[in-house]
Amino acid sequence: MIAVELPLTGVDEDVVATRRALSRAGGDDVVLGHSYGGLVVSEAASGMSEVSHLVYLAALMLDTGEDMVEFMAAHESEVLVIGVPEGDGFVVDRARTAELLYGDSDESGGRVGIASPKADASSR
Image 1 (spheres, rainbow, N blue to C red):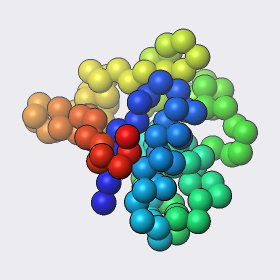
Image 2 (cartoon, rainbow, N blue to C red):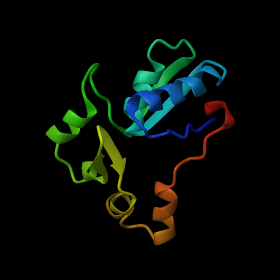
Image 3 (spheres, rainbow, N blue to C red):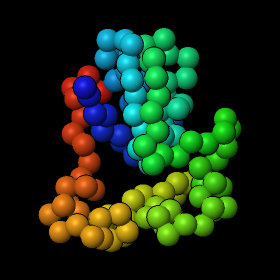
Image 4 (cartoon, rainbow, N blue to C red):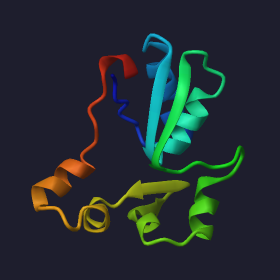
């Protein structure tokens, strides 16, 4: 199992990092995308024979060519406001994430929940 630490500098860069990790993972891979990661794994796995299944866990699953920023603007949700506009995209507001997604957890549980996974060396 590997976790890809996304650079979060844009969808294209996140897809490249994910494709790189998948190409080194060994094949017949089941790939899980959570939240924004659903968009990334959809794009990254497209056309890759190494990927046997995609799993979406509370994830964005956009139509081909659908723009994430437009999608988020058109679908108002309290959860979607954890993405704060920056440049041509969004960055995650960690305090808001903890409040909305981990509000009923103790403080340490919320910190663990929003921590970035550390990438396996194969994703670099």
